Image (cartoon, rainbow, N blue to C red; front, side):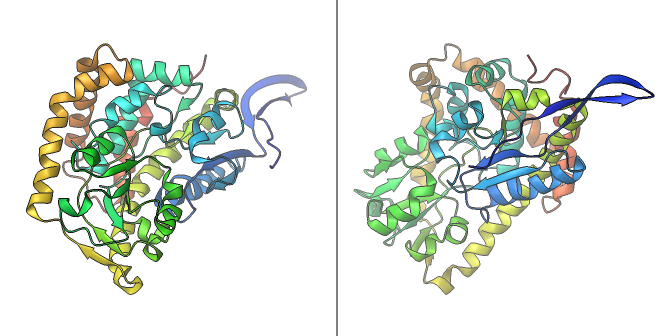
Length: 378
C-alpha cells in the first residue's frame, strides 16, 4: 500500500515574522472507489475529479487514486475512510444499514422516483443539510461531501427475460431492500452481492440475472456473460456518499481548499449525470455487436412494477420504522420528498446535455451555501 502523507499546516515566515496560516498542503492522499475506472461513477466522480482537484489547488491536493477493489473491498468503503485507509471514498449504503439508517430509509423509495438528475441533487442536498442525516454521518465517522444517483436499473441475464413469469425461480442480484422485496414478490430469489461480483456470479452460474444500470454491459464487460438485457425500469440507487471524507483529512484542509473541493464536486456531479446517460446509450447501441439481445418489457411487466411502487409507498413508513429504528419516518421521508420537489423545480428548464449548466445550478443552490468554516468541523 502506498504510504499516506497526512495534511500538515505549515508555519511560514513573512516579513521576518513567523505566522500561522490556514493553508494546508498535501503531497498526496488516498481516494478510493470500488468501480473500475471506466465506469461512469469512477470516471466522472474520481478519475476526472482527482485531476480537477489537483489543478484547482495548484497541486496541493494530489490523489493516489484506487479504483476497483485494490485498496478496499466494496463492503469496506465506509470503514476504510473512517479508519484512514483512504482519505476520500465512495460508499454504497446498502452494505452498512446499521451505520446508515437514514440513507437506507430514503433508498426504500428507489422505485418511486424516476429522474436521476433530480435524485443526485436531492440526495446530496438532504444529506448535507437535514439534521438527522448530518447526525448519521457524524456517528458513522465521516464527512459527507456529495451524493450520486444511478439511472434506472435493468436486467442483464443469461437467458431471455420477456415477462414476469420468466423471472420466477431466477437468482437475481439486487441492491437495496425495496428491490429485494420486489424480486421476492414475483418469485425470484434476491441475492445481495456487491456489483463488483456480478460478472463472476453470472459467469459461474450463481446468478441468473444482474440488476444494475445497462451501461455495465460495457463498463464491466457484462455483455461477455449476460447475453440478454431487459429494459424493465427497476428503480434507481442513491444510498451513500459519492465522496466520504475522513474527518482528520477534512479538518486539515484550509477553508479555501475545502471550497475548491466542493466546487469540484459540483462539476463532477454535472458530468456524472450527462456521462452516465451517455454511457447507457452507448452500451445499448453496441450490445448487438457483442451478441446481446435487448428486450422491452411487456405491459404486464410494467404494470407489475407500477403496482409494487404504489404498494411500497403505502408500506414505507412501517418498513422504515421497523427495519431502521427511525421513530419519525413521516417527517424524515416527507423532508426528503420536499427536497426532491425543490430540485424538480430547479431543473425544469435546464439543458440536460450541458454539464456546466447543471453544475452551476448545483453550486448556486447547494454547494455555495455550505459554510466551509464549520461544515464537518468539530
